[in-house]
Image (cartoon, rainbow, N blue to C red; front, top):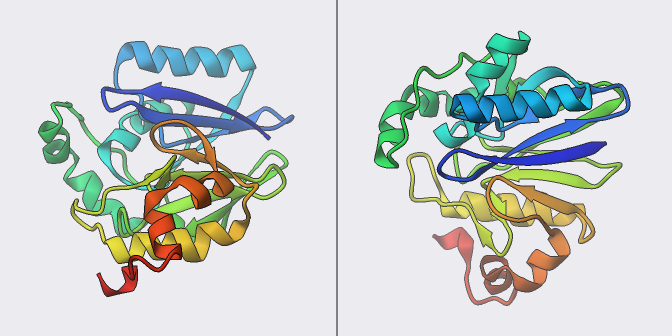
Length: 223
């Protein structure tokens, strides 16, 4: 599986295009929010000769969904998101205004990830992992052959996602990280929703949120 990261919008959200030798591709967390960014995404897809088949989202925050409408309109592909995060789409205009970003209409959900366990495209399979905490319906996408994990805003390089926004929960995001993500193995490569790439092994050593729990300094389940 091949992966490209395209940082988009004023919040510098990581949009990922993933594909294999069949040229079918999935766009994860499309954050493109202007004609220039739409063109940049379309140009990349065109240069690689790719065929988009799905816009899949780790969660429903506006900075991760700004480009989904463009993908649906241009390529006629469905949008996959947990129904638990629908309320975030409904409130995107208000959320965006707090960051000075005009959102426009949000896309309708075509596939509820709560009802699915995997995403198939070409010869590839992305496993859907439930990782609530940043949002109620947050998921991660994992491709075991290449050990690629798309964590959205659950796990960043040496940090974690915010839990002070509507629907956020610190104890749940830590459960997701320690019970779902960490057991995948130290060699797994982490592709987060913002910032640089990492590995689970690196996070076990240098992520202060993880280290303080593993060292017994914090009992996250009591928060």
